[in-house]
Amino acid sequence: MARSIRHRKSGRTRPGGLRILGIVGGALGGLLIVIGVLLALNWPTASLESSYTSLAEVSTSGATQPIEHLSAIANGKPIAVKLEGSSVLPSHKLPTGVPFTVSVTLGRPSWISWISGRQTTLTFKGTTPRAKLLDPVAIPASGQAVQSDFSNPVSVVAYSYHSSTKYVKLDRASTHVSLPGATSAAAGSLQVAAVPDPWETLPASSNMVFFRASGTTPEAVINPDLTNLEPESTITITLSVPVAKAFGAKLPTIAPTIQGSDPVKGSWAEPTPYTLTFTPTAGDFWPTETFTMTTPAPIALVSPTGALGTTGATFSLSGGPIPTLRLQELLAQLGYLPVSFSSPTTVPNTEAAQIQALANPPQGSFNWKWTMPTQLTSLWSAGNANVITEGAAMAFEDFNSLNYNNKLANPLLFPTLIQDVIHNKVDPHPYAWIQVQKQRPETLYLWVNGQVVLTSPANTGIAGLKTTNGTFPIYLRFKENYMSGTNPNGTHYHDLVHWINYFLGSEAVHGFPRAAYGFPQSLGCVELPIPTAGVVYPQVHIGTLVTVMPS
Image (cartoon, rainbow, N blue to C red; front, top):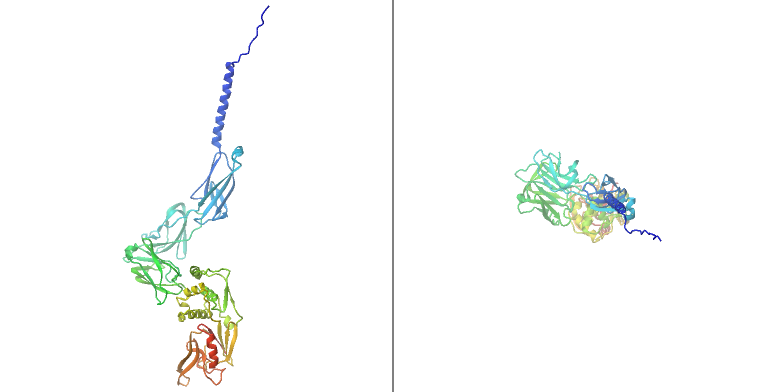
C-alpha cells in the first residue's frame, strides 16, 4: 500500500517579505522625521520686547499668528495704541518717564490649538524713554551755535529765548544737538526741553546758560528775575568761569534791607563747577520785600537782553508784586473784611501749602456779610487793590503790632498772615465804618457789623478848608492830644482835643466843643460833641474806613 505524503508549513518568512517590511518601516520613519522637521520649522513662537523707538516690538516666527487684540495702560489709565509694522505706538502723545504696560493677544494655528490653546497673550512693562540735559553751561565761540548734550538720544528739541521758541527735529536721534540761531547775544539763558521719540510730549524745560566770550571779570547769569522772586524761589548763579576760580572758597550772602525783617535762611550748593544755587529753607522772599546780595568778588551781570550790565559785588533783590487776590482771601478768612470768601478748594493749614497758594490762589467767591450802602460796596473789587483791602490790611498789621504805615508793602504782612491763618487767629474787632454826610444837617453814622449803632450831628470844614470827600482808613489815634495851626484870621491855635481819629493828613474825626452841630464850622476835621466822640472812639480802630460824602 502506498504511503501518503503530508506537507508541513514552514515558520520562516520568505526573504522577499523581509525586504518589504524594511522598506515600509524606513518610509514611515523618514516621514516622521520630515514631519518633525516641518513642525519644528513652522512651530509658532512670539515675543514682546523693549524698544527705544516704540512702546514695544512684536516678534513672531513659524506659522502665522494673527494679532487679535492689542491694548496698553500708561500711568494707570488705558490708552489707545496702534501697530505700525511690528512696533506698538501710542495713538496720542505720552509724557516721558511714565510707566506703561502693553498686552498683545495672538491667535494660534488650529493644528496646534488642541495642545497650546486657541490664543496666547504676551505682556511687556516699561517706562517711556526720557533724556536729561547734561551740561547746563555752554561756551560757544563767537558766531557758533549753542551745543546741547543729553543723557539719551533725542529726536525733538525745543528751546526758548525770551518769548521766542524754536524746534529742532532730527531724522536720526542723537545725544548731541546743535541749536542753530539760538541767539547772537553775548550771553543769556535758554529754556531747553527734549524727547527721545516724536510720540512723546515735551517735558518741563531745563535752564541752559551760554557765554560767547569771557572778559577779565567773570560773567554771571542769575535766575529767576531778581526783581520778581517768589517766597521759596531758588536762586541760581551761573558763571562763565568755574565757581572756585571766581569766588574761591567763599559764598555769596543775602540779607533783607529793612531792619527787623526775618533773616534769610537757606543754604548754598554747587551742582556744577560753574553753578551756585541758593535754596531757602522756608518762605523768605516775600512780596515787595527787598534784599541785598553780596558776592565774594565782582561779577559782570548779564542783563535779560543778553548784554553785559552791572559789574560789582552788590546786587538788589526783591519779592514779587502783591498777590492781591490771595491777600483778600486771607483777610476775609480771618474776618478783617466786610465780605466772606468761600471756595470748593481748601488750602491745607501748613506753611508750605499756604505759601504755594500765594502764587496759585484757590478759585472761589466773595459775598457781602451785610446789606450796606453803595458808598461802601462800590469800593470793593475782588482781585484788585482798593481802600477796603488797604484798611483791612492796616487793621491786621496793627493787631499784630506790625508797622502799618507801610500798608501793603510791609515785608512781614504775608508771613504773619499765614501764621495767623494756620493758628486761626481771627480779627478781635467787629467791622466798623464811619459815614459822614455833608448834606445839612451834617451827620455822622457809625456802622458796626452792618448796623447803624450811632447817629450824631457833625461839623465839617468851612469854605477854603473843606473836609476832603472820599474814603480813607484811620491811620493814627489819640484819646487826647493838642492840635496846632493857623485860624483863617491869621491867629494861631493850640487846642487840647479829645478822642482823635486821623484819616487823611491832618483831617480827623474827633470831639470838639461847639454851641451847635450839623453845618460846616471846622478847619477841615469832622467834629462831634465830646461825649459822642468818646462813644465812637472805642468802637473804631486803625484801618477803620471813614467815608466823607459830598454835599
